[in-house]
Image (cartoon, rainbow, N blue to C red; front, side):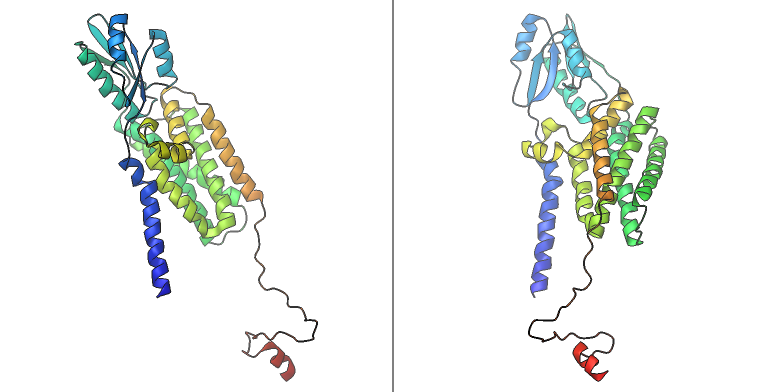
Length: 325
């Protein structure tokens, strides 16, 4: 009866935690302080500034400043208002969910001013919007499965070689799949994908070395919760989810880095992030695995009494077996 209760409670707790860390992210989505920029003459700028709310953060700036903010991905969109015309500028390297919100909000602002709207942006295809997060998840799963099979098949040496080989092959299969969808990458983007795959595989191999199959309890949960968070616009997330999950998940850095390389050709922070993850994996692989003692040596007690143990070979107590011999 006790086993029944324990297993039932464990199932309920796991289901609650997974729901909290995955579907809870999407269920609590609500915009707050979504950054947008507006370039407009003073009279119109004052009216636009009054449209600011808790959901959006409208910044009235100069044309040069607006372009810099958009290039640096500090705003999701720019509305430039000129006599008789309103132009919305979007950056395809920004999270597509964010640009979609920006276009909707800025279109409403322009229409409220009675102006026709023109949108200037490179519109990614559905495959291109999906590729950054999909590639991140596939690279994680590929390394995880390779590490798990290495444990199941009782591999003991050359874990690092298995991890690197798996990373190379998984990167190739992922790039091939995305190419089939019509997504192409530059040489720098391919190098970044390989770096992500290697860092994921090394970290996973290190955890499998020390935890065995139990590492799936960590790696599996990360896979389930991270994509749900990484694909969201941070300004749409509940502040708790943004601070506790979004701020550190490696899926966010891989998706954002790949998206930037697809449209801008440069990243910086992301290289350091995955270099650090790879280093942690190498350290784990280099550390000696703690061995559990098979049997504790028995010592004679001071009073001369010897503990009696059962010999597994013939089923007799060890002391009796010695006397019989």
